[in-house]
Length: 553
Image (cartoon, rainbow, N blue to C red; front, side, top):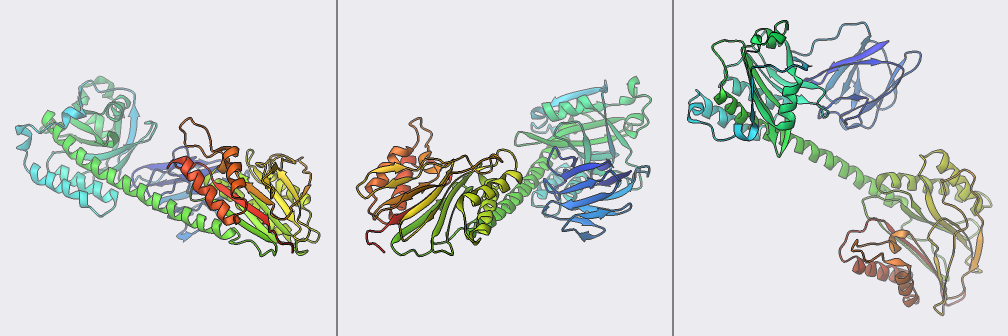
């Protein structure tokens, strides 16, 4: 059996690689969570076979996954001794009985249940009040505060900024060890983001009280610890912090009503007992550091948002390119389709195709869900149908069944789509159609009467035993076929006055029936926008209109 061991520069990891699949990422809840800014939320996946073979796959991470220095693009095998980089975090696959590597000179953090008796808590709001005159007399304080404030323009990495900040603090507050600590979301783990110790000295092991950590992180309290060696509960501890420590202070890194971490310093020198003034000075330094950390977090968030926006823009462009820009020319008929998405990408789709026998296939579908997932399912449906268009003797019912089964067997439960698909014979005006759970389209006759084309079967992709019955209608001259998705009728401005509705849509289409399909679509969109009164739409809108012209072909 193997282990994956490594560090992100602040925390040491050791994971036993038992048979199974393991997701690596920055997202809380990942099987192997690495909360480093260069690691994507879903970065990579390990697969360990029952025979003990290990494979690694990158999941489209922003900064890449590297094995022995080479960026991987597909599933690759791993062997003992292989090095792995997730972004800028370094790991190695080792034997399960191999000793763990050192933690790059950073203190190891252990949480204990006990609390030192000689400790005093101070609310951070109190600690951040203007410094008393005695504190401002500390040598080098004002230049140090100026230097810390200058880090607001620091262009180096977060780790470099933290280390420089600790060096600045060490010039004002006498200390043996300084550290910036981060705490996991569930406050079960504490790890070192940056530390400063005398050159050549072992950073040792920090045994921190879980109660103290909770006080700092949850209640935003600063803490002053005075000589914990006098506390008999810690007399047997062998770490530097509890066996030799004379005094320690810690403050929350607090900004925008959020605790981002802990700033901690300690000393073993009996001449350097920390006081309330030192605690207040450290809180002031911590406030500056917290502000800078928040800037890094906002920068990461902005970069992630920019990447996501770029990916969505590309997805929207691809989805648009997949749609037919204009229907095939069909003498004697006016045809138009319109799709307006409520988001960058969506689950509505339409299509046209002139079949080898001269008939025109057309369809409108509405995929369950919204956003990128619905768009991917929609693209799958569109591609599946297009493969079948050029088959000899294209049969509509058979095509719908094949696509439905493909969707059912290759997607999750709850992934389905409503569909209206038809084949128009331009010579006779006959339309063979299937309505798979879709909103009933309208036939508006020349005289203004209306009929609805009700469903002839269930949604596609919902079941593996569905069948659909073909129905047939005939479009007479000046008849209009109007197909739409529920984004039209269910447009809702959320004022309690109800939805746009079928009645309003029907009246407008009847009134505009003699106009071109494009003009009808534009009038309907304008009327929906008037109804919404500026309220953003929550669903995609798709319309497909076929009108048989007055002149016979």
